[in-house]
Length: 351
Length: 267
Image: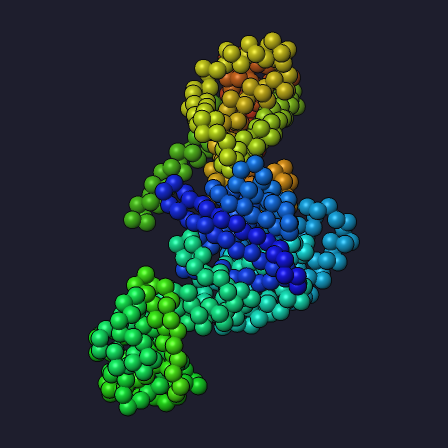
């Protein structure tokens, strides 16, 4: 893996009339890397993928793939049919009148490869994706999972420079998702395909990504490995969206708690405090909370509780806690956010 | 409610079946007999119409003209419909095209007869198969564009985007994706075109004058005003023969069209 970037997205802007969809998106992808664009629905993820694919043109900005400027939002524009990218659509968009074999073979036919080479490559990729037994079926005769595999096979059979995927797992039975995800990640890694995937599912993003790009209201708010994003969220939104952080408005009643972290009370820029469900211990002192419910999670319990100020928090505990009982909890790691929501400080205490 | 609908359907059915039944009985009358039902039914009228009158030739003409007309329409209409439905053409071009299609579709066909005839005459295409097929574009072209446009608008856009990403240029997409997916639309255009034009009289009677290029409908029309006018048996049997292909056509193709439509666009 070279450190030079393979795909560069530079200052992309896109709006439809008054609706601003993308506003200054910048990022780069290294060869063989798996980037996941994570964000709530309707925040411009699909638009960004379509701009990279060339289906939509940006109002401003540049897209560079493998050293070639494919769109500079003015004169240079390479259409999607000549960009050599693969695309897995959310609804797969298989060709309904073709068999699975013809669907997968279509990109190769467009490249005018000889017939026996097409057959070889389709069969090879079908074996890898375990769909070689359904190649003569039409898409309408395939299950959702098989359709997704055909869509993936069609996207990667031509060995594209770049693979784009738009919520590829959303139409798959939740029970199968985890295994399909793992298989896809291993396959893409073994083939060394550079990939960009869009999703709104943070768990999916965390498990798949080499790096995450968090998009909110058309702006990238954090780029980093799943661990970086989880451990050091750049702001309140990321902290809540990735891993579900409890966030409380700072009040004087927490001052004794905060003193333990040696936070100066006069630090006026700090407005919110947050802690993750797993970094909480039940103690004799700390935040007073009334337990509302406890959910069994196998290895742990999720406790849902209401603190004095009325806010609901959730945290994990090894043992169940009686509902309606009062507990005192102490976060072992807290995040402090400014009034604009930016992360100001991350503090830990020893348990 | 259901029984009311049944009554309604039966009435509609009778309005078709009663005249048709009377027509069948008339066609079986021997010359000079006027009783209904016929006392001594005979097939002589049919034999005469086919053997002496060679009515099948006129029916073949009808088939040929309509077939060629629809083929020309399809060739012109598919790219046009695709452009209206999908391409980023200039807005005024779009409006102009759509307005023209609607205008021609809603004009009475007779209003274009004289200019069309003059044009074909200048091109020396009167009295030719191609000439009639071209004149039929007045009916078929706007109508086929109409059907195909609404059909293409219903096709999922993403399938086409997928084809672009798979490396298919504009014509490859039209050939490998749009055309095969439009087959149900094309079939309905062919069926409706045949049904609409089967009894076309105005254009075919004006543009063709030679007997061996006349269509079935024109010959039937002439029977009423010709020497055969008194022979109702011949008139009726010729009518029945000309209706038969339409009945076969509809009942045979209808099964396939519903299959084509339901099987064609299901993702």
